[in-house]
Length: 577
Image (cartoon, rainbow, N blue to C red; front, side, top):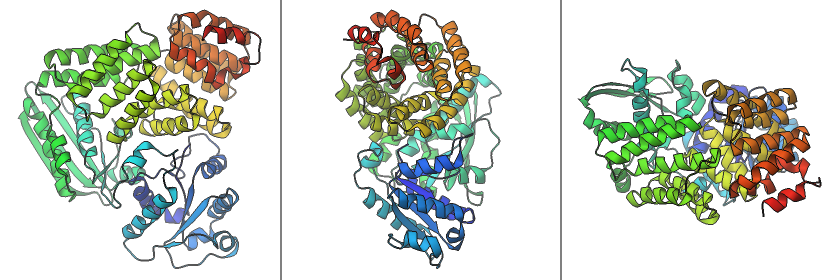
């Protein structure tokens, strides 16, 4: 993990700790806090130690409770031992005693003895940012766009589909995503990412619990009813601290007014939260992605399929995006969607798609909208596939500057860094991707490999457990997809569950035995299992047909380390020259 701040606090001071967490993370400072960041089933103490080692600063919410807490004391002592910067944030007029006095005697104290806490948190944010400086391992988004202290924070929960037709789910989801996208363009707001917000989809939740879990003040919820050429959208803005209703409205309009409705909701939130909307932000929000509602509905269907991440759904998504551009030849987001589908099919399933075609499609999206984050991410992935690595990195960095919540930009930037053996950078990118999409087995499985390469075995085991859980869930949803089976098998092997790993390998090969990427990952796991000859047999069979990206991985993939001292490995090196 790459962490800026480790937050230490006594249980009785949780409310203050969560307020500090929201202030720091709302300004781009990467935080670690228990129990939020401890993976299910992992060893608590082991995770604490790993997080303190990974951080730059330890912020201690200091009070009489913290002074007496053995847990806080051990965390402070561990921070001293690891030579980490310690910043006590004193919320009560109390002095440290005993071991705490010794540990904290030469630290940078910040007093927050008066209410409200917000001004003191703003001072802490400024102090932390100065201490962190321009560390190259931090997120590009943090370096590029530090936010103002104390800005309002909001989560947009998935709008309920009230149409009585499950097939209309894509439409309510699409409206939710568009509102999140528009609000994210407002620099005066901190908006929870789409993938995090959608973890609450189809769940009965309490607003106060959501507010507390995510560390945000405001919650937007709503519903959509689409019937023929008419649509009804309801929305309400709630203060998550006391569940007080701040604003609510209902829109009964023609379907062609859907963009106007989204615009009105965004402006209502901005107005209610007293946020200043900059001229460029106003212009960006008012810009409709298309004037063709039918093209928009096809795009939303494509987006729904794209988020399911399997070969058949990528193919379905591409058809939907293609139909959208047939209806509107200037629909930038749809072109970016086509480029993504083609790139994913090439990267994950070795589909026979010309890279020049993907480059042209992504270039078309950028020509239509140069400020579209997903278009820059799509372009970056296409350039990576074309082995134009430095250009790809520039596009990924640009995408993250435009949208720090872009899962695709972080995940595929991580892939590019992994292939170039830039493991420290890859770790931070995959960590962010995993944060943005908590149920994604891919980012977690990649993170396990990166941690293993870096010798961070405790962290590798923790993310492997979580990856297996997510992969198992994905296999249930998409039994035709071999990817969760072979990535999950690698994680099971790392956890010592060899028999189960072999079962998952057999399942992956049964699903798609001719897929080169499946064969490559099966070979990697067999290497981990000690089945060296079968691993070599499979690699020698597939490498003559593999693309350059797969060949490049042979040199950096830590799962193949057991093969590198064996005589047959030289033959592999000759095959990938």
